[in-house]
Image (cartoon, rainbow, N blue to C red; front, top):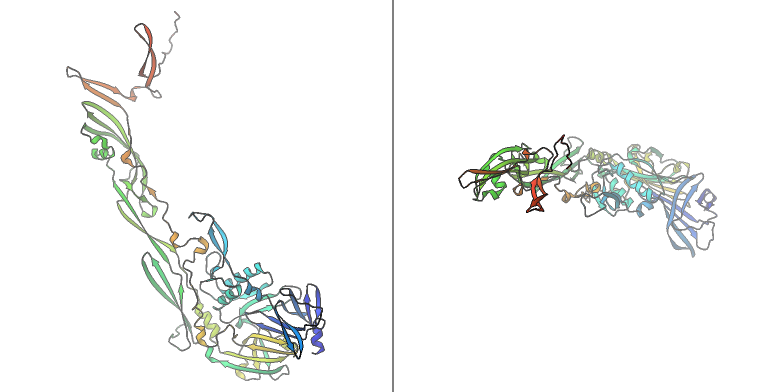
Length: 594
């Protein structure tokens, strides 16, 4: 191990700074991969009581010169034996490891009272999530979903900062369950095949994660004939280029017992012929529109207050044969609609009118030789709708809109010539600048490779040997090895049955018909109200005799009722009850004393 290796690298912990030499480090490697955890692997003799004693899950930084090149915590260790001597090999991982340990959850609405359809809704976290849908229930693109996942992990762990997230590709909604933040992030980024990640490290701050498209990274020209390059290999991958993309969106709409499928296509480039080798053809099922058909039955009948038969239906007691000479007169009415609602409920969507109505009339009749009059009143619900079944179609779900530009985004990520290879550098000031945040161009390897702009996929530095291996091209752990794998981007996707459930806490079966008004009081049981009473009879000589009770004969505000009065009977004081008003004294009458 050279002296610079021992003295140029340091551990920085909460306890201070420790050079590798004081920590007895005999070997160290730093491995970085896009969309994976950076790893720092180092070995210490098991019999060396150095100044640095690694502890699992305790964060430390690795400093080279004045710059931080890693921050993480030991996740595992193992004993190894080399040339008869025992060593402990430690593996530390950066903040991406926290993304792998945290289950991603989203906020869903949940009724505070499960027994009530109108219950207040509370927020709860669920590991059942809908990728591509934000907290308001709207669709979001890859950047929006990636930010949501990273923000959630940051709230839980707080071991990193969010840097540049520039992935404006569209995506479709995908319902998943129990995924880690790392798994959810990779599933999201599948809609941007050239997405890459990198971590920036700082001596006095938390690391920062960046998520960008590989094509947006700055280019680095590498002269293979320079002394920095020890060896290299490069190969074109024409098998990974695609001539075009066609996304077929299928949306199944449902209305009652009927279903129909609507298919739309997103094609890029325009005019691209789908029946071409290596073309990306994918069918994406979208959450369709759903309609619920509601039916409502009502019974109504004409209102005919001028008809004697109509009143007899309301007051069937008068149908008795003892009632004769029945006449209806003095009809009054509060409302104006022509039909009475007998059963069922009326809703505003039915397009009819409904009002409370009061209808009155005077009925005259003779019963058992006696003439009488009564004032009748009925209360009912009047409408202008006829008896029948009324139907209503309610849209219970609007459905998912097809994202704009998805075919173009996939095409732009995969249409250019792909290359892959690796370069082995001697550790130097130049090679230190090459990392996951750049694209590689090879100078001196042929014109074809001078502008290949191939994103770096992994970097491995061996501090003991002084070598740095840079791999570029499609990352093996993420990108398909052959074109057929690209066809599977959408294959494991699950569309949400009801994408509105997250923000409403209701599914399609919870759509109830409410707000109707029923027939109210059953008018056939209406009570009669007496306006006046006339009792007639005949004397022995055949002359008519009448007894009349008519409130119109007494002054306003006066009550006539049975009252107890004193009378003289057979010379004694007695009492009797007489139908009379309160006695009134005459005005200007002078009281006389006996």
